[in-house]
Length: 310
Image 1 (cartoon, rainbow, N blue to C red):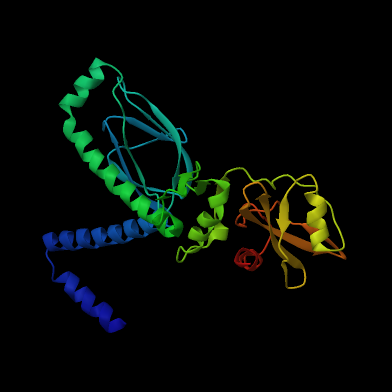
Image 2 (image 1 turned 180 degrees about the vertical axis):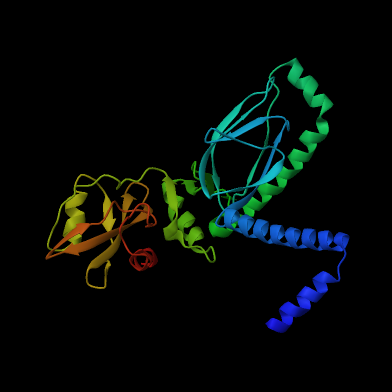
């Protein structure tokens, strides 16, 4: 260490005043860069790099009433924010947004509200054209991310002469699957859903049309599963119950369906799932064309899969 200090002292003494100043400035700059880099890493830790681009670029943008810069990139904590965008002569925008690894942008275009807004648009068309391109790119990224998260969307919509299977979104961008058909074709639509590869049907909210004839039932218990079903739907005429099967001793599943004697036609099959509590059986929920975590809550996926495959 003494030899190093001695060499450093000799090196320093051999420098003239100008070189000493340059060396000190270089060391100070290096230290500043290190401190800045560390501070930046700490500041950005756990945050999402977010693109902010709203046309017009002079718009005032606030998140949770805190103003942020437009036409730039910022770093935000992941979470939900109240977004507000305003600019005179344009319609204001206010909505709730989510920032996460799949939603890392605040982009959009305000619509002009009067002739002065139209005049501004005509003078700044490049802003709006650039923003339109950004919006399209991010919407495409978002669509791919949603389809990766919800694989069923890769197959929908499905439309034919027997049924249609489509979807819509909740405010949280969670898809709701809708199946529309006639009672006599509902089984065919369910069979089609079961052919979709790499799709966990139990994970979705699936709404079926026509209405479920077994949606309302008497919530009773009985010693035998089939007796539960007979008593639960005693007010419904002309329906059949299949023999059914036990699942692991604590569950029982079967299918029930209505029947049209006049036309000798059986309608859609509905899967019933029962659970044994002590020495009594009861319905877990209303029978459904497909059992999911939405319509049959608090039930393990393996049980739902077994019932759906019956």
